[in-house]
Length: 260
Image (cartoon, rainbow, N blue to C red; front, side, top):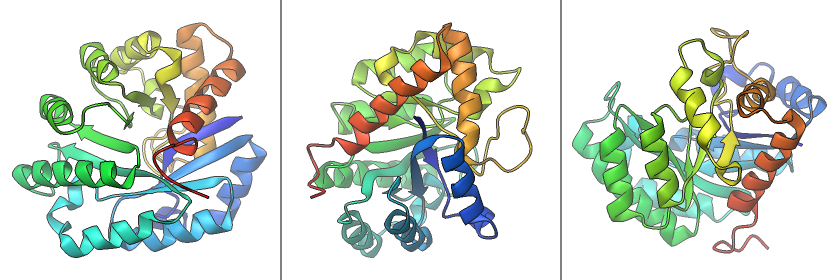
């Protein structure tokens, strides 16, 4: 019944033991996994995964780090890849002003362009936002009314969460919620309505305690969900079921995309 709503199984970190990680995830009770291809070089591997494993779904998009590489040719590649029935989300896209691997003005332009493309394709967006809170909110308000998507790997405060929720977005909680320094995130966790709440690993990144500093894997999402349940004073399995239903509602029961 557990769901990892965001990971990167296509990345090189899993090349040596991918089948073992996936098998272990099934053994640990994961029902669905969403693997997210963040650059063109990963799109083929995402397709291979979703064709090989029926419980793995995919999302594709150009990460803000790679915004400088987005052009008409890449857009066509995304259009073609998004026609696959196992591609259920567009992302991750957004703004990352922490590392600035792409110029900020380029990130903003590409974010707007990809929001329009996601809308055209009928796919919910997966938003990456780091050190760009207000800019992200402003662009989403002006360019993407309706909030059809999820704010992935949430890292902002409660005030920002309320704004994202008011726009209609889901919020996905990463393993950082287990860190001692994450009191603000735990406050957000206690506030989010249960029908807008998801959990993710962002594997291979951001392993929860007690695995912090090591490679993350999809089944560690159980640790995150246990932590969220404890903060919300609810049963872990009941919360996992709610999160599963939220994932299905957003990504798998999408009336905007024909997956027949």
